[in-house]
Length: 219
Image (tube, rainbow, N blue to C red; front, side, top):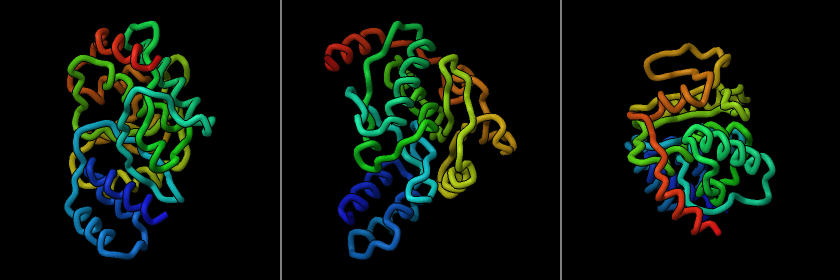
């Protein structure tokens, strides 16, 4: 609906994803849509974890914003991606388990797919770590297996185009074997441990007090 598209565009602009906001607006008319397009022209990505996704055939750069709770029960792929991300992040942080986190993007976009596993796992680490600051805007896509290996995904060209369209410095993480040449800005980590090293400015450490608090809230 027009109201949902406007809300999604505003939400993307809060994270500086201006071109993705313009894509979501599409040909929507009206003063508010035009005002958002004007803001989008100068928007630049802010520090944080972003997922590269495809929505309605267009690539988008979507911030991963988390809070305690469970993801939508209606999407099997998103539930699977979240479960794997939760297990991999728990193992990396050296804790038995982490509380479940819900996603704002799930409410606004209905975005799904197992390519969200890598950005979700990084978001889990960021949420439950003590002073874990992402290395600027970290844009990523990738599946993970139970061992933390980064696996390939579909629609890489659309996702890469969306990443390149956004303004601002970024660290781009893609699965190995995509055919994209590694550079100072673009990396192809083979494991979750390597992705964490590339994504964060200093090694994250589990915040056991926060984990305990969030676990109580999740009950």
